[in-house]
Every structure is written in C-alpha cells, then in structure tokens.
Image 1 (cartoon, rainbow, N blue to C red):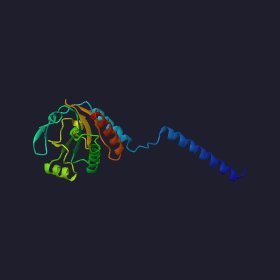
Image 2: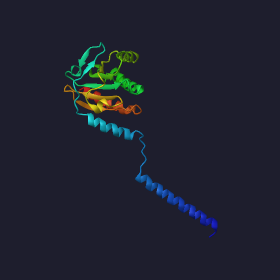
Image 3: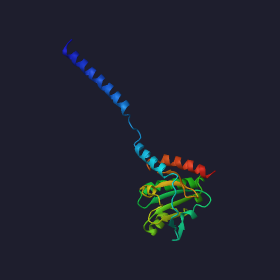
Length: 197
C-alpha cells in the first residue's frame, strides 16, 4: 500500500468519525428552529401567574376627564382588556390595535366587549394617540399611577390582553409577540368565540 492510499484511508476515517460525532451531538442538542421559543415559554409562565388573580377596583380617568372605577366598566358581561402604556413599543401596540380593528370590522368582536386600559402621563398625548390611530369608537381609560394593583401585571413592559369578569378576576391572559402575529390572531379567535356565545 502506497502513501497516497494510506492518506486517503486516514482522511476517510477522519470524515467518518466527524460525521458520527456530529450526529451524536445533534441528538443531544437538537437545533432550536423557533427563535422565540424561550420568550414564549417565559410569557406562558407570566400569563399563568396572572390568571385567576383579582385586580383592585381602581380609579381610572376617562376621555372627558371623568373618574370611573374599573368595576363600573364590567357590569354583566366580561370584557376583553387590552392594556398598554406610552412606554411600550409603538409598533407592538399598533399591530395589536390593527388586530382588534379587524375583529370588530369583521363582526367577530363587539366593540362594547372591549376596553383599552392605558397609562399616559399627559392625557393630551392619549387623546392625540386616539385621534391619529382612528380609535374614536374605542373606550379608552387611563390608569392613575400606572397601577391595577397586581405587581406582575403592572411591571410588564409589553402590551397585554386579558379577560376581566364582573368579580374583577383575570382570565385568559395573553402577552403578544409582534413578530408572531398569527399567535395573537389565534388567541383573539379563541377569545372572540367565547364572547359570541
């Protein structure tokens, strides 16, 4: 056997060992094809922690500068709440508002089953936001001191959906991810199905 054949056999054996090592490592550490997997998992944990908690009957400021208790908004039926702040990512909020507008336009959600709860330091900025984004028919209320009385919920730096019943218990919490809009659409489909019953 000449030197060239020996080198070829050694290279072939090295390639075979490399392939076997790669296959073995791939089985131990599968590739994560979902770049948002860990974020979805983190949000699912937070959502579960918030579900079944009760918010305090806090005061909010309406568009006409009137003060209302949140319990006065949730009379007989539960409401879908979309909570966001001026500090949240604007495009994240806009995507969700467009999703809500689509549901209302397609008669999948009654606008009376929806309440937007926000926190804007300057109420004029909220009115400007409402006008620019064509939200004239939406009920929007501004929290006082950005608090609903649940630290986990109050400390979120992202928009959040939840259903609030007449006992002020939170159900069906959902934290959207702008880059996975279909996930939000699926959530809204399931929630609006519940509201239409």
